[in-house]
Every structure is written in structure tokens, then in C-alpha cells.
Length: 228
Image (cartoon, rainbow, N blue to C red; front, side, top):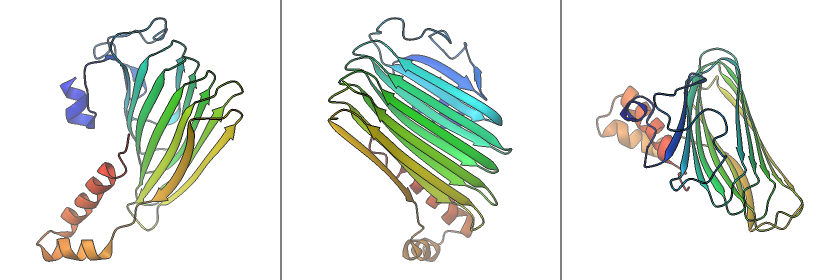
């Protein structure tokens, strides 16, 4: 798994894993089969890793149907051509929770759609999505949290953050909720990461070049807002 860490900066830990690279299942890095990964409860957490380059249409379906199972989702993708990326999560496992970090580096036209559906009580879906927009890119990201009837005490959080790496880049966020039961909490948010001019000037005066300042700002964005 050192390849995943070195190339994609994905933190690995003791877990049952299922890995996709460039949209394709990677059995050599996975401990679980591509299908039926939620047929039983595992002693270790389940870690779903989706990395690499995408184009055209891509879909990731996650259906958690067992109880008391912690699940982690790590996504680190980039696109140089128009792409659609759909993530559908359905949690029907009581006391099961998924925590996800999604990082998208967009150099073209990217449409990201996330549906996070609670279909049992005491379920958790906590997702944090970050998008970096390069020159002339257009990113559209929507996230919908659905808490169905009879799903009390659910924990829902859909967060978006964007970083415009060029003035020509555009990012549009649309987080939404459909709450039909009383949750433990249900949050959603979206914000743009702004470069602080005073900090930028300070770094330049400290001797950093323009490229080094830009790299430092990207690193700050990647590490900022990591609350899960």
C-alpha cells in the first residue's frame, strides 16, 4: 500500500481495503472482492480507495447493509478531459458510519454528484469534498443528504470547499438536504478558500518564490478543514 501513499497521498491504516485506480478495480491492492463487500461484518474497518485520472462518466456505489461497521472513503482524482463522477451512498446498517474525504483536481469540465441516503436509524454519513480548479476549468458539485422516515438519530454532514488556482477557473456548489426524521445532527456547507494577501506577502518577503508560495497555498488548502 506504500504505492497508494507515495503517489496519491492516501493515508492507509489496518483495514479491509477495496482499491480503484483510474476507475478500475485493483485486486493486487485490495483485500476484498469488487462486489458483495458488505456481506458480513469485519473486525477491521473497511477502507474504500478511489484514485487516479478519470474521464467521461464514472460511478461509485456504496451500499452499507450490515450493522456496526465503520467505513472510510478516500478519493483523490484528477481530470484533464470532461468527466462526470457520481457517488451514491446508501446506509441501511444500524450503528454503521462512513467518513469520506474526496479530493478533485479539475483541469477541464467536471460534474460531481453525491447522494448520501440514510435508510436506518443511528446511521452516519460524513463527507468532506475539496475541489481545486485549474485554468479555464469549470467544476459543478452537488451533494444531497437524504434522511428517510424512521431513521432517527442519524448523523449527516455534507461539506464542500473550493480553491481557484486561476482567475479563469469556476466552481459551483449545491449542497442540499431532505430530512424526514429527527437526526442527531444534519449539517451542510460550502466555501471558497481565499489566499490571504498578507500571508502571501509574508511568504514572499521570507524568500519564497512565486511557485513556492503557490505550492504552500495548495498544501494549506489540502490540510485545511480536515475535521473528520
